Picture 1: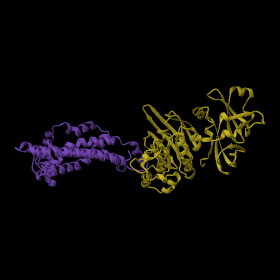
Picture 2 (picture 1 turned 90 degrees about the vertical axis):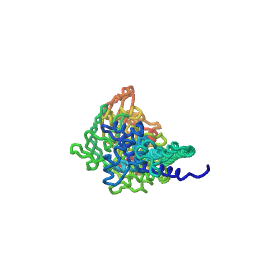
Picture 3 (picture 1 turned 60 degrees about the vertical axis):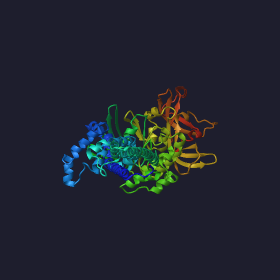
Picture 4 (picture 1 turned 30 degrees about the vertical axis):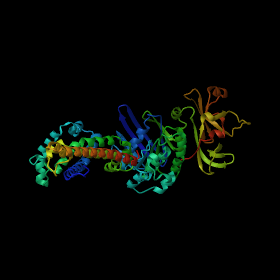
Length: 231
Length: 365
């Protein structure tokens, strides 16, 4: 078959892209904050926070999705509050799929950002300080630009991984066509349907291609930014 | 006036230093590595928190822990030139220079164009720090600190990472700055020739304490300094005004005290102040005037002190017309000449022995 993608495939692709980009937008600021706190701040309970941030890496995704359901479900403490005050519903919505994806890819992102923050020479921040820059000013004008390769790498890796998040999404946001049926969910559905083999194969190939493009793009972009930053 | 009194204790190290020096001027912090020079500048800058600190610059209190005041680093208005330059890699040279200028919340003392001109940075402005040589990096770091419009400039071995040729390339820029600007500077170095070229005041540090301090000329006569610089660098520093210069023969006359010294130099300006170092090992003493020697200077004087140095020889200081010179002679020579304090002597100084040691004077207060 040499047709372009079918409508269902296109929808799954669009949804995957939508969910992944929303999840990156949601988690990026928090990941930068978490990376900064874990690298620079010294406080009791830092190790616990560190472990907590990395928890989604080792937990079964289904457990994460289930926890999100308990917290953010219509009757959950956070979900109920969000619905009452902001009219936001997360469970079984695209936004919910993005939240589940964000939680799952958060450790990946924090790790990449942290690595780059650790390479930022604190002597440069000291120099900025003697030149009259306040703490926030130093962070924005020196630390953040120098972390940019890590932030980009983290965001792109998380985006690529987010395209294919399965367990947490299906548990928390279910498998609703056009709402939460992303590429991996569509692939799973196709595999379960009689005669869906061809579709499943096409979706698998598509997933491969997307993942590869994402990782290559991340590497190339990071290299360019590094060069621009003078390293 | 810069007045500093600080205390910092760490598990394996204790720094307690008090010094005061006239401003503007170049205050050299000199001592072996590990003596606490960098710690001391970090305490002055505020980057390192002192256990006790009293720092005043030209009457303004920068820190007084007893009164519970310490101006934060970013508002201390102290420029800091780090040993490793610490240029921001993501900014161009111009961006680095403007960084402090943009953030200066006080009236400008020196402008962008002037700094670029003084330090010869014109051709570098668009470059990134990684495209600069070590000497260029040092110059940019200097310019960046100057443009933050500091009341005081700290220089922590800014030339230490450079080889000899590169140092010679940057030093004239530093000298020009010192001559043109009246910003007080604290200059950390363990290169004695750098100190002699730039400093007006010398603070000698040893194991976290101030061993001695004072004007450079006087400090050169102190045994504490002599033992640190070693027998080959011990010498007197003479300051005077050029009264004559013959560019064809490369010789100049320098009025020192009530006398005059002929020296061998490539460049000199009549009427300009000069500083020259006379190494003690290059000075010959005679108990009677001598003739028929190639030596150009025979300065009549009297013996002030005679002291065994730490290396088996004898250091004799002599007053020659109001200036003091040092001569390093053997024990044998001392006994043969029967030298005693108050004796009349002639100090014989080869004009070429002063070559390369003639330094323009730092501005004096």
